[in-house]
Image 1 (cartoon, rainbow, N blue to C red):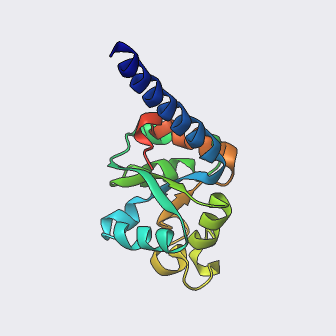
Image 2: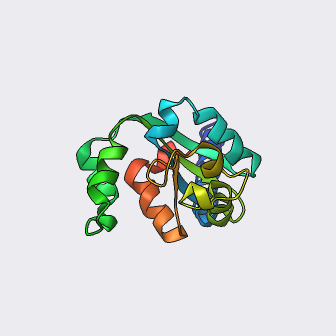
Length: 165
């Protein structure tokens, strides 16, 4: 009897390890996304997510939160020396955001395509920024620009146990 119970535990542990390996392998197909305060203020979270999902991306983790100034400064530290840094931080703490992890084949490229150009005036019709952005600053969404940045951005907001697929 003890042997069969031990076998069940071994099988369960093997299954858990298999899922962890699969999740690690899938990291090449994940990215980080933020639905920014201008979009959440206008209740566009569902519309933005519908576009992302319609493009073949799957939401595997999601949180709605209010960034603190310290969080926004740390997250955008790469832009600290840029002239827009202070305005960016102020904008990102001006209202709630939705942070999320998206998964799909060629996820970064696919997301960049559906988001559209940073400047909504230059974005293609049908993209998130063309349809929803208010300006180049209030452009509704942020998305990882590389797999390396995606891993760092995901780790900033999510623990591994929160990415559940």
